[in-house]
Length: 340
Ligand code: RBF
Ligand code: MG
Image (cartoon, protein in one colour):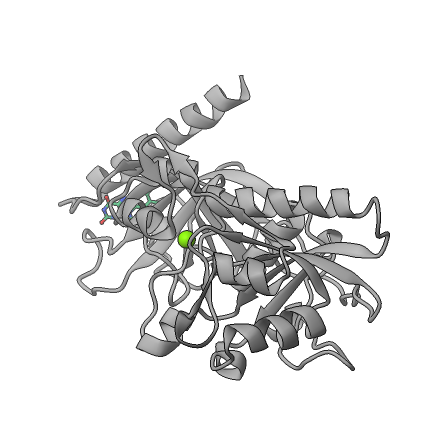
């Protein structure tokens, strides 16, 4: 994680990081160049606060509101920037010693926030300030360290020691300079990270993506597989989903693979491959349409789009091969229909 961000060299607190400029991160979320520190002592921040695990449509509403408010405030204060404040690892994860499956990695979060128009991100460690009272948090961290003059949070936001502070407390402590964003609903359901996690694990990726406002994805290095795909005449890439990321239900998915910022249509087998192995390790194996080249050792992002079917155990290599070719045909059809 370290190469993405830099500690602010002076003045402001340790554990304080800044989102790099949009153009400095590739489409695959990998940083290509050195970052520029974009905050100076006399800048003020209008800031969204939250957990932002999913960076889903509810979070998007919060961020949009923050960007809009910042533009408004800029009428009176040219040195105001828009920001987002969150913990690197969630308090839940640290207190319980066990994490809920993640819906985005840190690099991707920063990338998404930058895409939404935010100027900076404050990423703190819960270990450093988890014991602060709401008052201390707002005075010392938000106002002093982050230069926050306006705060935006969700209706259910909690903060400070033992989660004593809520949205109203934040507004009070900010002397009224805060905005509380209401629950965002989709149909009858309120959008939440836990709902999205469930949809992903049930294989309902399309619904999950709709609530995320993006395709669920992971980024991982391409590793060596069994070289069997090549023998089948179907070369694929193999990846291990990073520890902690939400696992889609096993099966075959229409996917999109991001290589050096370019998106390729693809089809992925997420699971155990029961026809060829007895080992219980989940692997993500992807056939990329219209791509030739060596990807070993490269970090590549795979976005899940649509679940085609479950994994099957085939008795013969020919049966497996013809099913995979059928999956590829369906995938090609899907992307052709999207072009039209
Ligand atoms: N392996 C299985 O055991 N069952 C499957 O249903 C299955 N479907 C696949 C679908 C696609 C699109 C791809 C790329 C692979 C699939 N595999 C499946 C994995 C297959 O066994 C593997 O590609 C080769 O054995 C080479 O590793
Ligand atoms: Mg929430």
